[in-house]
Length: 226
Image (cartoon, rainbow, N blue to C red; front, top):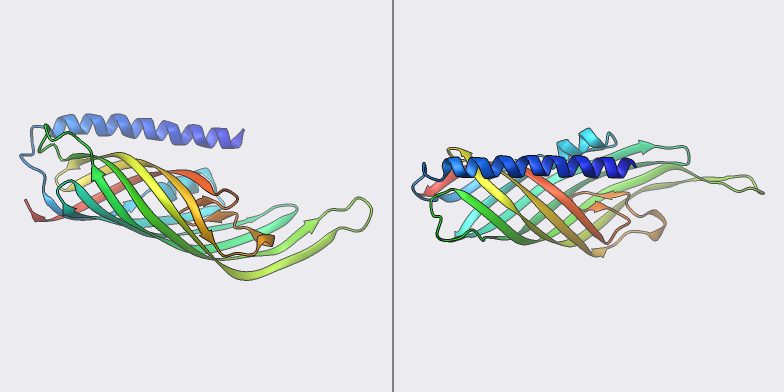
């Protein structure tokens, strides 16, 4: 029930941003004569949103987009995510960073130039490195005494391929708001099977090979060509 409630929050926020971006795109359609070229510096608000919905998680990430050709962007993102919680049967701590790099294509029609709006679809490669430990875990036994032990700190590396898609529009001059949906597929992980990551920074649930996710971004454009 809790997972359903969290997903409902994600969907509600996404619909709100979709309406906002569509409205802002219509407002900007006639004000801006052409699409500037340059690179952006921005922040992904998914980490703070996740903190509101899950007190055990803390994280944030920063991103950049660079025009490499008309309607083609390089996208890079780096950040950190930490997880810490205690339950009756075990406790868990993880501190990690992640890095993603890839390309995005603007698929909006060429018939609408100068709107400063994009519908971006991309592919990226991601990797995360984290230190995780379980200072306590208990295996209950109905006959023998319960088994209590710990798993010391060790490093886990995870790699994945990520597909993404979503809109981005200019809400003020050189200031962009966007959101996107992500589909991530794990391709490599070098961790002991006895302690799979509860949560992988930038990737998601450590038990899954396939994860979905959302991004909510604010970016400022530094133009080099108009």
